[in-house]
Figure 1: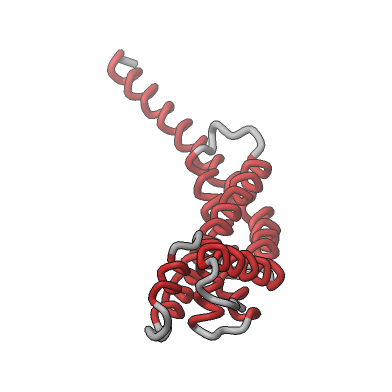
Figure 2: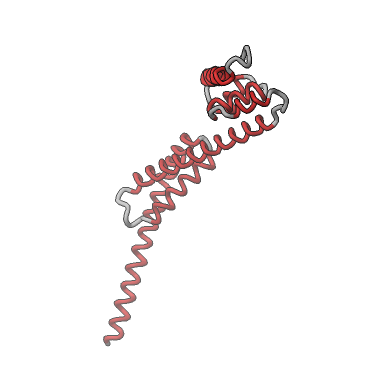
Length: 183
């Protein structure tokens, strides 16, 4: 056998070994997917309470595992840790969306308040800290009950009542003797 034939043979053998290794990895990944995916997706489902999102998270965990397949020693553990991180990201995103929705609802409710009233009192209310201003505007100007104000702001009813009390006390102190009774 000539040197050239030997070199071609060695290249061919190396490619064959490489192909066999890739097929072996693909087979192992497929077996892992069949064994772990249903449990992982079910676990995610219990955490996010949505089938579609759970399957997206489980699939993304497998995608990230495949990208690091040769470097990961414990694939099942990697999948669950990755899925937990993705679930946490999902929860954070959902909380940001809830806060944004509450903000929009609060701004809409405040926008539709009547313009009549004492402008000096309105300016004093606007000067309140935001924590006190929003409940005061929603309760006194938008005529919403405490329950709805609490829901819009994402607070407990007791907290809203305490904030309204604190707002009245600040307004009373700022108005001094100009108004007899604020309630």
